[in-house]
Amino acid sequence: MYKLILVDDEEDVREGVSQEIDWHAYGFEVLAKAENGKEALDLVERLRPDVVVTDIRMPFMDGLQLAETVRRQFPATRIIILTGFDEFEYAQKAVKLYIDEYVLKPFSAVELIDALVKVKNRMDEEAAQRENNQLLRERYRKSLPVLREVFLSSLLTRRLTREAIWAKAAEYGVALQGSEFLVAVISLDLKKKEEAEILQFAVKNIAQEQLQLGSYAGLVFLHNDLVVLLLRKETGEQERLEHLMQGLAEEIRRLVEKYLSVTVTVGVGTVVPDVTQLSYSYEDAGLALDYRGILGNNRLIFIDDVESQPRASVRFDERKEHDLVRCIKMGTKTELHAVVDELFADVIEGNVSIHDYRIYLLEIMTTILKTAQRAELDMDRLLGGQTHLLAEITTFTSVQEAKSWIIDICRKIMNSIASGRNNTYKRLVDQAIAYTHQHYQSPDISIHKVCAELHISPGYFSSIFKRETKMTFVSYLLQLRMEKAKELLLTTDLKTFEIAERVGYSDANYFSFCFRKHVGLSAKEYRNSRGNSGKEEAP
Image (cartoon, rainbow, N blue to C red; front, side, top):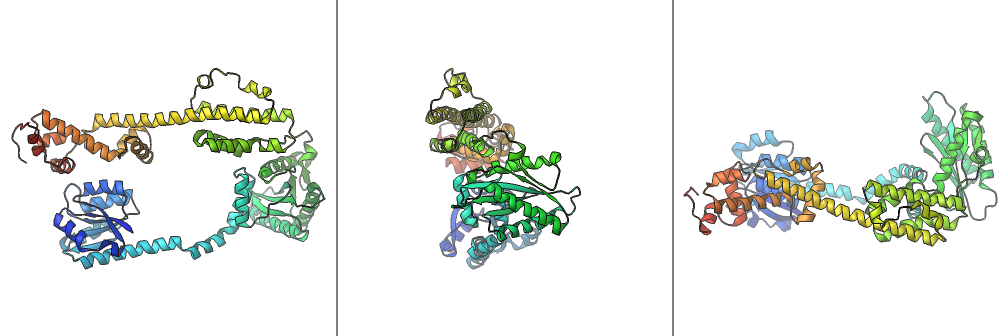
């Protein structure tokens, strides 16, 4: 059911049209009726209709101005213009770019229905096109190779949780089950990059063929101008992944030189025990590749050969940092427990030295403190004078104690940030209200002017203003102006047009219209009904 607003300054036209047509039978619901463009624009902003049916000639804001504003602010809204024959040519020229249908006056219900059906059919066709499952499936099928490459690249850039990895692997048909994983990167030894892209695909094809011929459990894909070779150890596989990678990568290197007449250098990372740690192996492969500046090109370089120092078994990477920061800023207590459990999963599962473990805790705590600092929190007040947080890392007697300590600190920071956010909302709304009270007399005050003053976006402001005041800014401004007008009517002898100017209306007739609409009485009737006749004035 499409939602519609009917706009015409003639009441008999509005009522006649609304009663003569069985709107529901044609798939429409009349949300509201307006008798001028300004009133209609307020309704559009508040109700967000699918269709606006409007006359051209109306007071305060005509149909063309309304159509132009609606098209600019709400481009998805369809517009049907009701126009007299003498206005038709002008209407076509003025609004040809944003009017969906015209109906010439005088018109019958059948003619309006015909225009409505045309507009509805277009909206139905567009909706059907968006929802056409077969079309979507075909587009998805064509996009699948690209989506798969994007997914595989994300494994190397720390963006996905374990659950997300398995879900997407199943969706894209990517085999990732294994007890160990190893990443190698293959880089062309080229000084000139003119044919690099074509050669990269050729190298990828050679690597793919060798992977299939040798029945290796693995994948080949492109990422950041490198050919990435990923091997995994399947259940029952006895040979070490390093040995498998040695044979496969060396054969790829040899074949590339033989068939493509170019050389490649291969950097091989460290073996990792979990699919979520592929980024570590990839990072190490890139570090190994850097050693070609010392060792030369056209060779395999294993990171474990060139950097033999012990390597940490747990790392606080970008994804973990992002998840923790996001949770502290916007998460729930349940999400916090899940994030902290994930942080300590590698510690519990792996053989971690106490030195590496304390560095890991230090990195976590540093991120927590930086998040609190960016939120401008007083940590001394928040934590009751605990000023040596980093030193406490050395005092924990169990992983559970460390987890509980981190959760407790994060909860306090989360509560403080949430409280500060609510205070910020209230402060912004209070500032907006204060600005509105100072400038309601100005005819051009608007939500955009208020937002420019507060340096925030209209969309953000609208949501927090309605949340705090339970009304839209437009409604609040109207209510404020009407209250000020009522006050002036009862306490002064000003004429209606003078009061209109004082409360921000450049058009006295539109003020009178709004006042009667809001209060239920004309300005003169309201003044007289409250026992203050004032000076006689024209109604």
